[in-house]
Length: 318
Image (cartoon, rainbow, N blue to C red):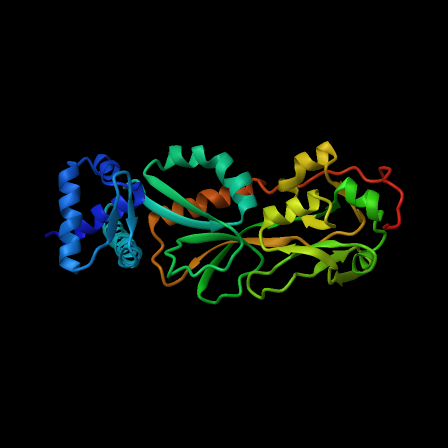
């Protein structure tokens, strides 16, 4: 038995969901695919897959074996690629992590351009602001806001992210317009943002050019995902500091309005990070360069807002 070939066939069966699709993807007879997986199970003396008439499901042993097999196959492909002609088109699966707002507004709208340049690269995009174990989860790189504290990561700064403090008209109708940042610790509510590293709600910094303040927000709801954070603001749950590229339509339609326009938040750096223990392959390099180019062109953008507009008078909470 060619164990390496059997591992590749097994991985493709898992990824496609059944033997027929795996056989088609591999351009192999279905019986050959079935026999190779059975031979692998016999060699390992365990059942890797539970078969039904329509699909296959991983057993506990199968899930563990698949996770390690994919990592081994990826490392072999990287080794082969590092010794092959550098002009060869980058190929293979690329695992990327980022916040949902970046995926929706930056990656997906530009993805056809990337695919046209690098048609042999397949992207697995993990969405969320959670902590990531880059090695154990086989993550190639991530797009993150804020300076990374993990010394095991290589960080490349690619942009800066500005913020606009805003709330929904329904919230302002109910609670009134804040006049000073300190109001957000007293009579007002904010949307809390949970830091993935500390698990604590992040403070909200403000600066008007004369003084700087840092507010510990009073909140009803907190979230550790940027889209949930924004949706809570749209639902009228409190004041939020949001990135301009995520709220253009909401501001234009009046679903969100700016508050405390004289007070700004210092922009936060945006980094692409990847583990320093992992060889930077061509597929990672071209993706990082492509993403950096998009962000450098101003994909995160700024938002021109008109200030001084009339706002609802403050009302007491019933």
